[in-house]
Image (cartoon, rainbow, N blue to C red; front, top):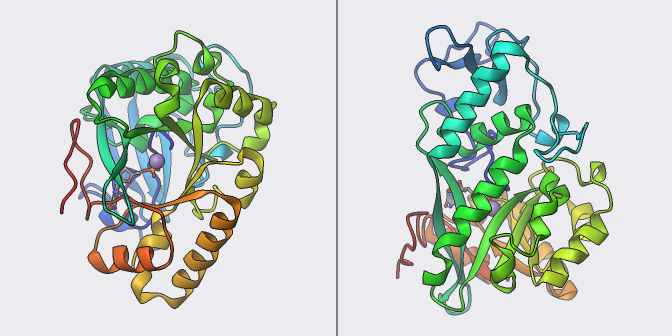
Length: 336
Ligand code: G
Ligand code: MN
């Protein structure tokens, strides 16, 4: 999971983490104006707490006995692969009880993982184009997809989460109204997971109907041989999208590296686009550029009619957001 989904403080991004202003009542605002401890929940009385802090709006995840380590919104800063095991790269290694506590929390969250689906529609006709599969968890400690992925990154278990996501996401595909495509989020480090391209992997059989959405949360630079890995995915029939384009960590260099079939404009560009001449200029330029390159542009996170109308007028090809349909169990209807 993006892909997978990620918690980070960003405007209007439900499921990607809370903005500091949305922090639950347990949070405190310190005199300095920095919002600190958001939540402390113990798995068991004697188990370590998982502590989620928001420092100046940025999320910090640690176990109780670890020193708080500042995380940036760019998750790649902690996801630098140190080893490429079958479980995926581990970053900072919690030890002893901390490790067990986090492992137990993640295992429990994995067992309650389910996928929500959100329609993506054609701007020109409003007809269904595909669904994005979005990770959801019922777990009380890791309820949001971003916290889930943070824990997986800390434990070097991104591959476990990705494999579960891909297996679950593929399950209802025989019920997807044909020929709707399935968009699945992929953490960039998963490009190194050999199971992604294995002939028996759940998505391989339906690869020609699958778009893999990649966010550069872990820098693509830290991944060996991106072009040949992506070429292998294409040989199998997968298409590639760059997710959250414009969010800071998904930039134009990713376009050059991945040569995607789709780009998904980040929600921060979509939000209030009708009120912002600068955002309109940016979106107009980007749609013109991608049209020239033959790349399909998706606007995501559309919440109001004015945003939708502006994005259609600016040349976006595909639309996604609460205005059209909220994510839900397979398969939500598009609002007319
Ligand atoms: O990183 P990625 O683009 O895959 O994340 C999509 C996230 O955005 C999901 O958690 C999804 O539920 C959420 N989402 C989808 N549509 C909207 C919307 O219109 N507004 C907001 N705020 N979030 C949305
Ligand atoms: Mn996505």
